[in-house]
Length: 124
Image (cartoon, rainbow, N blue to C red; front, side, top):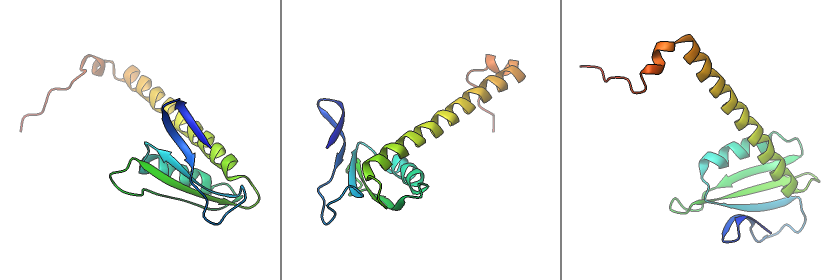
């Protein structure tokens, strides 16, 4: 199973299984990703009470991919991954909205700072 952004680029694939034959344990390979997504996604997935194990590894520092392992109690690992991605997107959207609102508020409270796009360096 692969999910693609376009027909030429693999983004997510399921690694060949070693000893799990059911849907509750899978290793996903996320291409063009690193610790930034890996750790945040691991955290979101581990909050799910149906998850026994979720961990990730970067196979080699020069490879731009992570291996994400998910083991659950009776729930599809693929569904858990989708839910984790959805919840992480919601959190990121909230952070972005909060940041943008704070920038607008700051500019309203400090109108003189708008004219200074690039502050002058301080003399030492």
